[in-house]
Length: 410
Image (tube, rainbow, N blue to C red; front, side):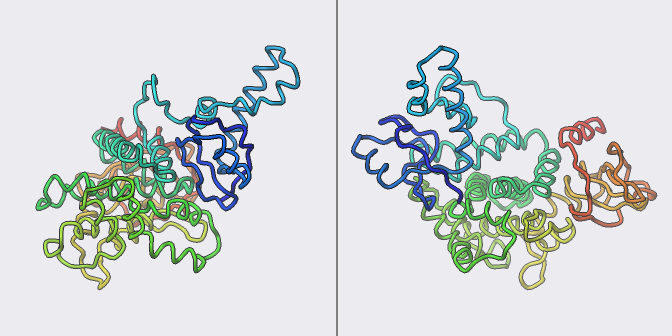
């Protein structure tokens, strides 16, 4: 993790810090929202050296610049202006971090991008004081967005997953959570009360390796032995961290612990937590194959679906079957090839599984279209002949425009 040194004088005693304070190796000394209670403690940190995440440093610099600009306008003495950094308060930095205020602010309606940011913050810097509240809020927002339409949710999340590496861990967990929620609705034998721990387990499944997962998304080299060890231990370690953060729901905890080791087989023969873990594992594999990293390209929807549908023994997997039923063989947000030679993005699942609503984005000669064009794949001339990988489509699309096009098509 890249860190930047800051002056301990910019941190006030008994005032919540708007970003985590770290040592030179990036380890957290004071979590975001924590306080330094005494001058003695502040001096101890000063002697050790205080650093912040490089991403947080930009907000800190903006707050300092804003303070100094205000003092210049007020004709403050140069000596006072030079000490502006000492007077930066948490609210000034918080505004630049776009962090939610603790009081007096009306929250805007949730969006998928906003929810990814919210998840990233909760998973990177979990704190016992508000962790459960933040996860419950994320879960509530997710269900609210999903209620607006599963096709719209999948279009937004799958397209983002296939084109973005920023905040990879949070975006991946968000997509997996939506997939397992939709798939659980296909499993009629599952009690309704399993849904909440299932979603929360999917949200927090990679809690112990969130930062590492973000790093791996942009890392061109193969994983190091230390990174592989972290990956192998993250499920068990994540469950332990969740318990320390106040999670007591055994279904939630065990599903996280088992989500990388749940074996194949009929779901009804497994313990409840193992059933949840199995569904998360298959959704995890499916979503991962749709997402690129620096070291690998994203797969086609067909390849991702096959990985979810067939188990480790190349037999039909019950959890994987539920996922394919839930998202379709051509999920919204993926790319397909048409009989015309065009490449299109799927906007909605159709009344027939092999005839989704699509918008062509690349013409038959391989050139990008100036605007996406709706195509009716129920007609033989426009039928789907296969899937395309995201790297084959060198077109940047507007999710808002695609959603509007989908809504206008009815």
